[in-house]
Image (cartoon, rainbow, N blue to C red; front, top):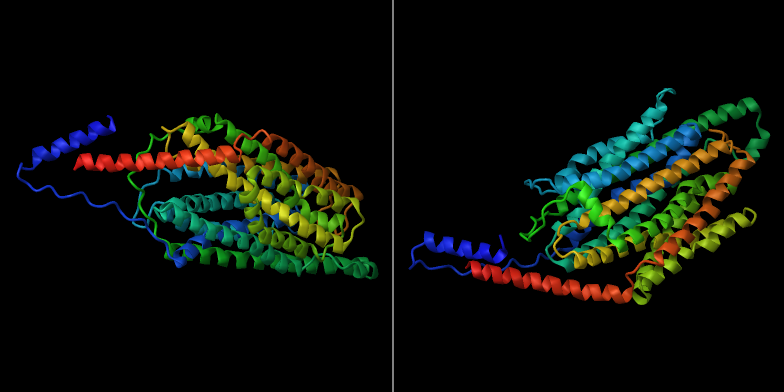
Length: 517
């Protein structure tokens, strides 16, 4: 039934039910825009911290933890990393699909997912960093709890991301709340790296170089065993601190944010999972953007996953690796405002080329010169700026693709979240493959689990994983992004067309309301 016919029928029904002399009340004015206080925006922003804190801790430290603390064979560690990341990628669109069909409750539609998943996410995260007292089932232990945590984390983060649309009906207020969220998420990545790194960095299961030369074999075994227990306790302590922060952020989000019911805007019929994938994958700009950033993201994920091992064994900075990682994250956090200014001043495509390629000379430099602590810190500062660009720009360009899709498909509504969930799916699945292969390559290089000194082949493999391979992936990704069709001219044109569509929709709703009365 057409919209106008429905209005006429409704008007006719009112006339048949009420007598002719009945006074018809004027239509209620449109509901005003919801203004958010600074406190509400901050409470909403705190909800983004758990994902970033746990993500940075797992990204930088899980591989070295599985190899040197849990002392798993590199082959089994590669399976855990691959399956965990792949499972995480699969759960994103699945949970997004289920959340979109959830019913409204007394506390909202997204909040129940956030509240119910929090205790299970905290428990499974803590158990990831616990070394069980048995050997045979250790691989199964980490595989189960890593996958369970990824599932619970997805049940928290996907509804939280969608909550943006339900905290206010004012686009400017939502954008302002998102800016607060980005600020807290950036601080979350730094906090996760700092907590895990500084607590774990204080404990080492390997003696210093001078100690290594002066102690006997028997005393070396005793020292290593005692320091390994200290390292295990340090990882547990760090995970406990992060779990407390996780729960605190979830409580602040629940108490400080009120979820609003969705407006009565017309939506298209829900698409099946297969149809949703087909609709999205046939939109050319989205495909080119995802594939391009797939390669560049893989480059930086390889760097992230192997950098702790590279600093420890290839550069020999065992006592400084946690500080070097923290410098990278601090540098990236401090340069995000600069990158935001750059992309608004020169355009997003130029920001992609300049920002991501900025890391290439430093990737080459770090493996070309002899190990030097000062140079390592300087390279970390420079590389951090590129890391910020690599992770900021995709989320800045995805809304442009969604707007382009809406303009070309005006009859399809309410599927915006699928673009984000499928993007996350492809990135996480590919990162699982890359981390699994890179960890497996360490096994072929002769990596000795729990040993303080690794063969030269391991050092060479780590150099390849943090320099030539990422540089190649960045080059391929930038070549693909060169074909990305949404430049500044098209983006500004789409923005004007979107505003016209919104104005037309508002006028249509007003005229429909008037015809009903």
